[in-house]
Structure formats: structure tokens, C-alpha cells
Length: 258
Image (cartoon, rainbow, N blue to C red; front, top):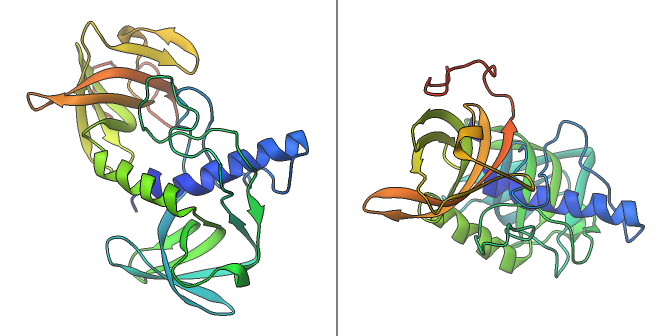
């Protein structure tokens, strides 16, 4: 089962903002349920993801929703009494909202803007774009929703543009091998291997702190901004989040992840 960062992004951003709003007493909502995933805000924030799906609503019913994804797949969205329904408020920060200052449009969360709105399932209408967090069955084409977010149309457009630019202007994933200045990662977007190279102009950060290429380790989750030059993705900025469910620290730097 693949994990698509852009599909889970809307929910992650909304829950991050909801947590911030609750802490400051600005509005409804709260942090994501434990173990459901989310995104770390701030510079270089990528964080962990839950299983997600995004699509346009084609049918509404009392006990389910039907959506059609951009790939043309039709899914039935089932929900329970404790499923959370929210709407992304206008002005909420989304992709790139907690950026690194480099102007990159990479998938990051960020607090700011208006807090999300808690809604009822009956507030969701046909043609709304929704992002769902939950257990997805790709064979039965169903998803058991733990949270559903109505995505702002402009944000949905931005997320689709980001997906199209994956591997062209940005990468995100877990490092599987480091060989000199060449780094291989398993893409968070497509679960496929990708390689980028660093040069004298590449900057490295871990959260807010400057680091070097030598500080990266196999198993680290990174977000990379850059461009393809002569068929090779050359990094301009690399933001590391450290090991997140990766291999043991003593794994050799040039060893592929098992």
C-alpha cells in the first residue's frame, strides 16, 4: 500500500493548524488523534504521514461518500461516529506555508492563517474536493475514514501542481544509500527510488540547524529542493528530519536499506 504525501497533506496541515488554534484559544479543533499521522511544521518540516486519499465527491449518503480521484479511480468512503469532519479555512497555510525561505514549493505544514472549521458530514456536497485519512483497501476501493477534510480549491490545485513537479523541482523520502555526493532515497510520493547529487552550492539543514552532507545518514527522512540538470537532480537545499522508522544507526552509509 503506497503512502502519498500530497494526499495526506491537507489533513496534516489542518490538524497542525487546529492544534495551534486550540493552544492559543483561537478556535475549534485539536491535535491529530494519536497514531493517525500529521506533519511537523516549521522550516524543513516533513514529519510522518498516515494513509490518505484525495478526490472529488460524486455522491453523498447517510453512511458513506463516493469520490473520484485524479487517476479516475472511484472509492467509497466509510465513516464512523468518531470520524472527524473539517473544512480548510480560507487563508490557512498549506504546502510551503512553513517554508525554508528558499521559495521552494515542497510539501510542508505550517501554522498560521485562520483555524479549520469543524463541520458535519451533511455539509459536504457533490464536487467538493476532500482529503481522507484512514485505512485504504485498494482492491475493494474503499477507505475507512478517521478524518475527512474539505480542501480549499486553490490549495487542491497547488497540491496537484506539487505532485506534477515531484522529481523535477523537489523530492521527499527516506535515504537508502549515500555514495560520496550522490544520495538515493525512497520517494514518499511514489515509493520509488530517486537520486540527487549535492554540489558546492547545496545547503543542508536539520530542522532549524545548519548541517553538512556528512551529517546525513541512511534512514533519515529528507525534503530536497532543486532542479534537474543534464538528467541529474541537483539539490539546492536539503532539509533532514533524522531517522524515522529507518535502519539502525550503525548501518554503513553506502549500504542499501533492507
